[in-house]
Amino acid sequence: MYSWRILHLIGEDGKAKEDFGYVKNFVNKPKQVFRLYEYKRLFFWQAASQVKQGEINDAVNSLKKALEIDPKLESDLRDYAKKFEEFKILKEYLTVR
Image (cartoon, one colour):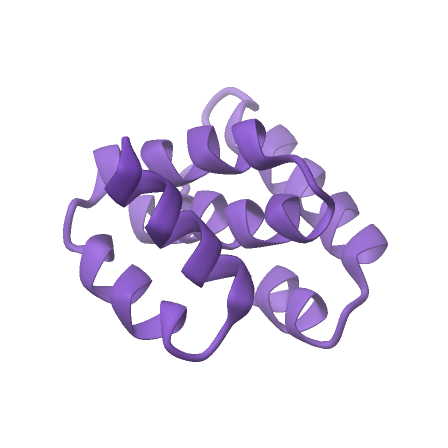
């Protein structure tokens, strides 16, 4: 389930976007068991991909969804902001608001 993160990091955002759609479709199917951990990570990494594509409002919304599921992700956001520009932008945007 981590292919979107790897694809994003190597710059294949088109494929990552396709994977985000697949996972969202999967969790919306009836009777599917899906770990909450994976879903929060989907929103977390989707936010980074959306920043890279210039979709800042969508990125912030995705990150907010991830943080609603697990507020502890804020720690990950701080850590990743030190390594990745996309997360730095998201962190700064959330700090301003």
